[in-house]
Structure formats: C-alpha cells, structure tokens
Length: 279
Image 1 (cartoon, rainbow, N blue to C red):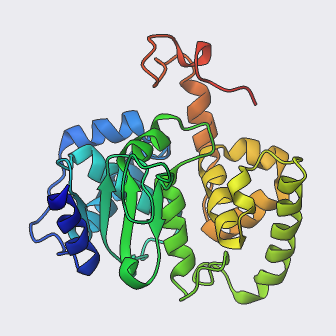
Image 2: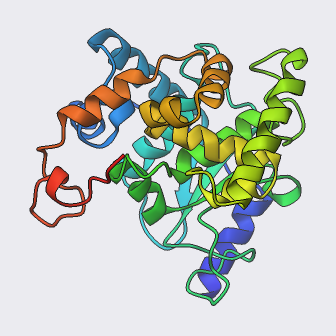
C-alpha cells in the first residue's frame, strides 16, 4: 500500500511522456475491430487514419498504472476514447493532457479503491489533476464491451477535456463551435435537465448534475446509440452533430449487424438473446 501511495503521489506531481517510438501491430487492428464499434464502422482508409492518430496519441501521452502492468489493450482503449470525440477535427491535439493513470476499480477522491466512498470511475480537473486523467480500468473496458448502454467512461472524460480546451469546463466547447450557438444550446440543456429530474427522459440521471456533466453524458449517448438519440431527442442529436462534425449513424448499422455475435458478457449466448437491450 505504501508503494502504491508513493506511485500515485509521483504521478500527481508530474508524469514523464513516452520516450520510445510506438509501432503499429496487426494484433492491435484485430483488437480494435473486435472491441470498438466506432472503429469497426469506419472504411478501411479511415481505419488506417484512426491507427495513425492512435500512434500519435500514444507517443505523446503516457498511460500508467501503479498496481498492475498496463497492457496494449488498455492503451488502445484509452487512445480510442481520446480520438472518437475529435474524429471530425484531424488537427486536434490534447494539449491539456500529459498522462492517464489507470486504477484497478472505482476510486474515491484520494484514489483509494475498495473504500465505502469509492464510486468514481473517471476524473480530470485542475490543480494537482491539471494535465492528468484517472480512469477505472474495468470501467474503461466495460464501456466498450457494452456499446449499447449509452455509457462509456473513457469517452466521457475526454469530452470533459474537449470542453476544458477553452479554459473552462462549462458544458460548452468553444473550440468546436462559435459562441453565438451557446444561448440555444444552454436553453436546450436546461429543458433536457428538467426532463431528467421529472423522470421523463432516457438520458442518464448523472447528466442532470450540471452543464458540464450533461454535455459529457449526452456525448456518450451520441457516440453509442446515435439512432436512438436521433429518435428520442432529435434537436439534441442535431446540436451534437454540429459540435462534433461527424456522421455517427454507421455505428447503429454496425450494432444491428452484430446481433448474432457472441454476447460480450461471456455467457456463451448470442448478443440478441442475452444483453442486447430493447430500444
């Protein structure tokens, strides 16, 4: 335990960026094709571009852990989480991130796992957390294993970084959209938040916490269940499409094609007979 606390303390003080060149491996393509619906829905040409952007991310951002060895799969899912929200912006660089630290489970504000108050699955911020992100490793993987639950903690935290790129985490990413769009956006956020409070929305309750969390939660929904979002919240879908400059409908087509695939929960049943939720 003492060694772990020293490691997390060193990480908060400052992390070293990767020093070695990262080379792409064919097994990584296979893993992404199996595990990441967004990647799977891309054309072959765009898959190559996605791979190049992953390499750039991994060459400039450290992915670390204190209680276990970080695997290639861990790094790939962190990088995919980073690239998906900014896929429509080829020149995007996370200048406000130096390192991602993976923990063995949900944690509290002291980064302790297994405590009564260990409920945090992802964190970015200011002060000691400036330029850093903490993620629960199991929840990172679960976010991609279940691509229909409208919940992906990796994407959620990177959306916060996108939001913070203008210097403030306020639920409005000025780096993606001109400020004149903010008034109708915040009016819609207020309306959707009231619907959540009144139990008249299928947007996750956590989205009603504040504007920043609404933006992150709605973005998870956008990238995981775009067709459902378009059907149930058309104005929100249109606004997020404008923000991200992406056509995400191919993700829905991919999910439909894979209903007969083995369920990611490991039950041995087909996905449609097990964990596939009804719309």
